[in-house]
Image 1 (cartoon, rainbow, N blue to C red):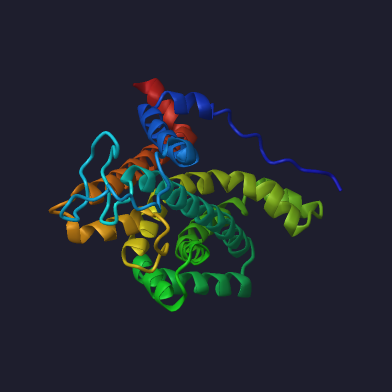
Image 2 (spheres, rainbow, N blue to C red; image 1 turned 60 degrees about the horizontal axis):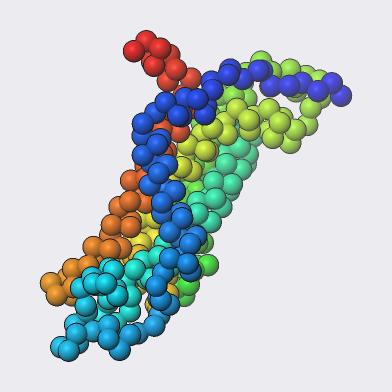
Length: 296
């Protein structure tokens, strides 16, 4: 069988374009900072996040404010907030990354199959997608979390379920356009199999959609994971997670505001970084970006 290659892609200079976008540098720096904090948590944290220090509470039993021994203060049990924030970064980022990666693979595959095949396959896959999209994401996550026993694998499963439908519908819309192009018809004419056409010709044309979506969706995944942990149906205690750290500090915000400010700042830096980076990646992958830059 004669191998037909996809039409040559224009040399957009993705990395060159990305380096010219200031948002990419700011977002990349923030993301890199949080990733390093998570990866180096055993080295950077001054103590085990579960250790309750005898001198970690005041004489009245209240959390201690930031000082030389506890740079970010302590919580209501006398645990070091810096250590819990760093180890919480490991949990929150790892859960969000695995869930986002799984949703990206699953959503792309569903979108490819639904867009390429018409009839029953497309109808069944899209109706399942419509059912999941009919529920607000946070309500669906809360419903699943209340039924299933809270644990890290369960949180990953919940985040995957509520995340992939939007990508599947987006990929399907792209595939519906690509499958009508001339090089796809040529591949069919020489007898190329459907699997070969889907993964060799169509997937490379729409993979940028998945990349941009995954980068932008990471921030939302972090927020949903933190919300579930805050509401008690996410990462279970005593494992440190930014969400359950905020939940522990909500009733003590007057006497120990750092219990809320520390994990909130971590969530803010992470979501801001991924939003800026994702927006820059989208512009760098857009062939019109170079034209706008040249025009300016």
